[in-house]
Amino acid sequence: MRFLVIQQKRVGDVLISTIICNNLKKKYPNSTIDFMCYTNSVDVLVGNPNIDNIIVLSHKVRKSYFSLFKFIFEIKAKKYDVIIDAYNKLETNLITLFTGVNIKIAYHKWHTSIFYTHNLKRFDNSKNTKYGLAIENRLLLLDPFDFDKNEIDPYPKLFISPEENNKIISLLEQYNINKSSKIIMISLLGSEQNKTYPLEYMAKVVEYIANNKDVTMLFNYFEDQIEDAKKIYNLCSKETQEKIRFDLLGSNLRSFVAIMNQCDVIVGNDGGAINMAKALNKPAFTIFSPFVEKKIWATFEDGLRNISVHLNDYKPELLSSLHHDEIKKNYNTFYQEFTPELFKDKIDYFLKSNLKAPELYQQNEVKVI
Image (cartoon, rainbow, N blue to C red; front, top):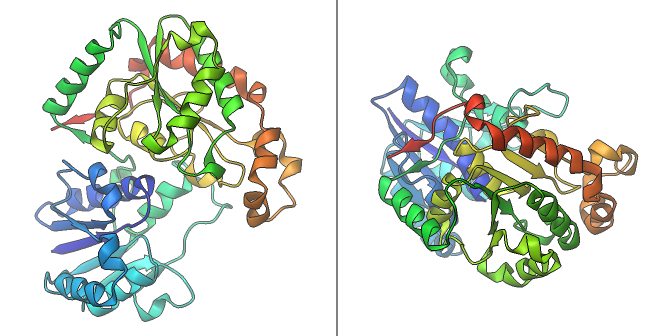
């Protein structure tokens, strides 16, 4: 059987959708499972033994009708038996429509019966979720295959080669990072400004973390975010700055994954870095933007290894009567209400719990390929 799993958009979305492949390969070990994504997300699929081929839908192809239809007919030639479209937007609707596949699975929308044979209604916020709705809704796409619920593996995984690991270990040595110290990754900035905790507040979070003895902090940011990263660094005290290795930065997504694999925990803005850390079985403390639905993206929340905070946890009266779009439009106003003092005790608890004996709380192994 030949499967095509489609998930476009960002790294976190793509990584979470790999659980579809992981479970399909376990049930159908002799099948071929291909994964379609954008160029920016390929690195989180590398090395996954449950994905046979990565199919890249590039920006150049997407912006040309001629190139897109040529791409579609290339997909058709692969003669898939099943398409699982976790993205379900116009471009993937067209890909599905013209490929001639018999079994086509996606989330229900008013128009999707034209394109798909199985249209599954997403779980909404009224559902009690064990893993987070982002996970639960991906697993929903497996319903047509009659999985035994007790055998489902809900955890996304990343796979790292020994060469990648060794390279990063050498890099840490170059930066004089003591092996006995705990290494904390700070997800310093969000993918967008409206998902970025205010810089002066994040500096306070960094100060809270620095109060722990024998810790080394690494900052995660993109090259085009360096000025904001420097602002946070400069807001920190001299003592805290001495615990930060500001320039130890992955040159690409794969190197970030390998660096994160050497860290003990991650703290910071919700986004791809948090999802990758969890896929490496690292404890995560997540700060959500006021307009992001925590119930969707607070995956594997257990109050110990995975803890998240949202303005709604502390001041629900500010958000309860507002539409999502209004909250998003005024995100900065709501962020200002979300002071780090509100959740300082939770950060302290998270760090004390996970920096002492994280081996007591293992949920799944990190895979080295």
